[in-house]
Length: 288
Length: 283
Image 1: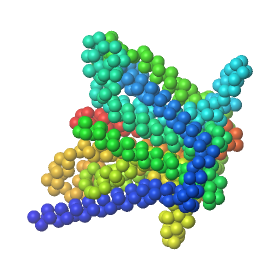
Image 2: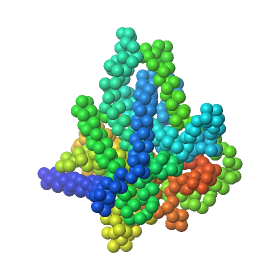
Image 3: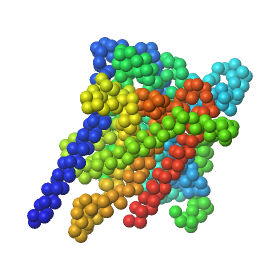
């Protein structure tokens, strides 16, 4: 009896120790930095805060960021659904290679993404003559590197597998019997997708879109290489970088003020994520 | 999937949309990912091998590789330790505020890297909340490798926690009970029963955090100070520097080596995951 009591006691001690370590780690490493953004952004008075987030530079950066995010979400949702349909409903040669290729953007440094777009569309890139020919012929002024299209493309690249990666496991678990039955009974492709597949992957799809949005809003390294004009092609993270690098006390406070916009978005995203996980778990008690 | 099944699938694809989705996927993948990456490869092939080696052997490039890989490795090891504790606590114990803490784990995914970078840099600078306390103890964090490692711990922790959590949720404690019945001490039970069960998940988390850490840019460039003398330049920073000097040859050479490293890590993670799923399917 004594032995078991002793064991229970030591188990309890371990439990409290581990909870303390966890709470300390999360508070010190994650919560304090989050609070510090907000407190730094209000280091000057509140009117300074408002002034910092309403400059022309910030407005333009916000527009570019939102444009890139919306395009990234739309493109990657279309891609994600197609890729998930292809990889979970059919078997074919090279399927595993294709799946690995889709995951490439996950493990690549964002700076290399920027570099690769420069090597393609920049002055040295092999696609540059093509663009120049088009511009000469039609009298247009299309630019990709160091312009908005480059920023948007780089954002699409870094978020490329986010949606597909969330829905593929869900559809894999579901299998393809229902779709096959529907197809044999004569249902059209789009009807099968809308009535059977979409309800199954709904939560995975929303989760993927949320992750994609979060990453697209905050992308820095890839667009940093491709965007040089402040107030025109800068995104919010680049604007934050420019303000912070100016180095004066007020400009650093401004950098944190602009950051607070992204922090608020990050908190909303975290909330949405948790709500979704909760609802999807309620529906399927076994969880992901 | 058995060969018989594959044969059947080839004979008749009942579900429509194979050619359409295959076309869309391959076109988009090529345009957005493969062709731009191939441009890096093509450009780096233009550099002669001896020049390639020379570019990579420059002192600041070598130092940056050592710094990036070394710091990412240390951060990933620390993350395995704390990630395991956090995942264990969040799965096995109940306490008030648990769900909020659980939600916070994903903060590094949701917070833009540049924001994380300037915040950590400010917190650990000598005037900051942590930095001023640590300065009293004579510890300097900002603009040193320690700061770099802290930033990489911040970005890497969700990878480990989120890899371990689902596996822990699935283990229902029957092995632990069996080990206890057989007279094993809790420490021994953990080391020889639970830890082997978690090894694939820990390795996956380690691989992902390590890979992310090697290429990390936004969250580390502010806190590291980017000094060539102090060896606090990370490899992504060096690429960016070469780009702004329009030294494309060096940038692509370094990028190619990084691409190879990340492919190897991705391969490692995929193999670990394949083994893990093979094992869970057997159970």
